[in-house]
Length: 132
Image 1 (cartoon, rainbow, N blue to C red):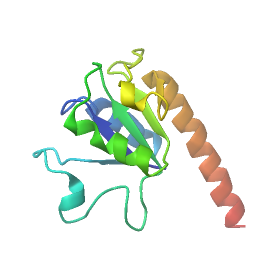
Image 2: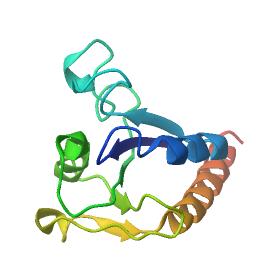
Image 3: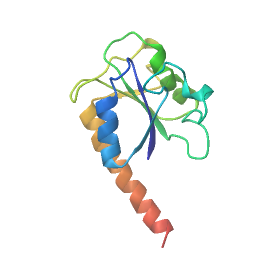
């Protein structure tokens, strides 16, 4: 499963990205580690476009105020993708910005990871059936 991981402030999604990759997810970001420039305007392009675009967006956040680093969540919502907001810690539920209330799901990281394990298992089952 390919996910786009955004974060309210640089570095807040690093631990979650490691956990998702460990589970078997492909994790892309909106910005490289060293810049605030959107990947959509640099070589390689936006993770929501191309041959194998992200299937969902996960936004890691801790405060109500929306930041430019989270614009990928807006792009994902506009593209009709599932957008999940999660808190900074394992058990933290994130605040939801007013403009996104009806377009996103807010859950704790532990619930998100359990859901990803289930989705990855379903994906493996579907792929196995298609290859038989």
